[in-house]
Amino acid sequence: MDRLIYTAMTGASQTLGRQAAVAHNLANATSTGYRAEEHRLRAVPVRSTNAPAPLATRAFVVDASTHTNFEPGPLQYTGRTLDVAVEGAGWIALTMPDGSEAYTRNGSLEMSVNGIIQTRAGIPVQGDGGPISVPPDVKISIGKDGTVSVVPETGAQNTVNTIGRIKLVNPDEVDLVRGADGLFRTRAGDAAPASEQARLASGYLEGSNVNPVAEMVTMISLGRQFEMQIKMLQTADQNDKSATQVISAR
Image (cartoon, rainbow, N blue to C red; front, side, top):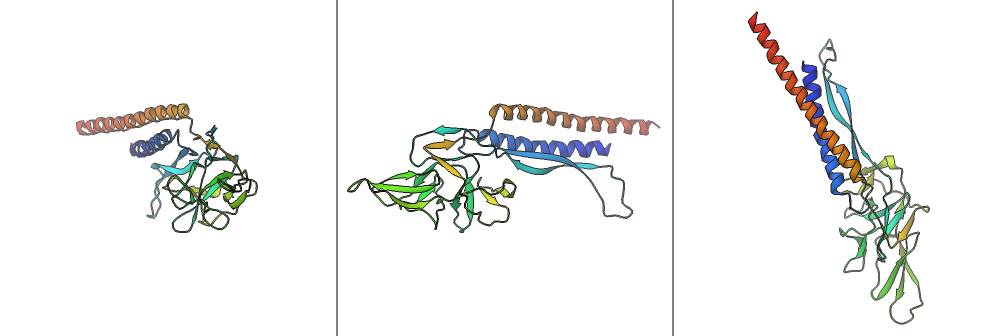
């Protein structure tokens, strides 16, 4: 009886967690560069430190791991100069306030009032030697390798100057972890080396890799699974009451 209760109770609890993850994915189905999150569950036997060790008659359902789907999303043409999308594998490096690096696929960039290239959230993009500063009164272009070039809007307009290069990295996916801010970092917290193979598409943005239809099907399946686990708890309660009545009658 107690085995049924343990399994159904913890299964229902973890199913709610999976539903929250699916809801989060659906909420970000249109977020630029978003990577879908998946939760994987497994059964773990309840063990005791008492001697002799009791039989493993109970099991918990636990969230074994949080998996990120790193499949690329669709490229969407915008024609905007500061919109870039990573083609294939790779990430755009950002300089965090504490000096560490974080990585994103969201290439919707802008310039701060001081001319620093940054994300919409105000986080500077990492260049060769730090943040990239753009002088005033220039036209900006970003090359496939991340090179940022400017052309003066007045004077010698045929003069092209390179002012920096966006740092592109391509660390092993198993070494990347998602932070609470939605940005990715290396598991050890170190800065990933620059990648010469990573490429950018200027004037494009990468869409989310969330499949809304698949997520809705998963949400419905999880809802039915939760109902089944609650019914198992109710069945266990009814069986316990029936057993108690039989014992009392004797």
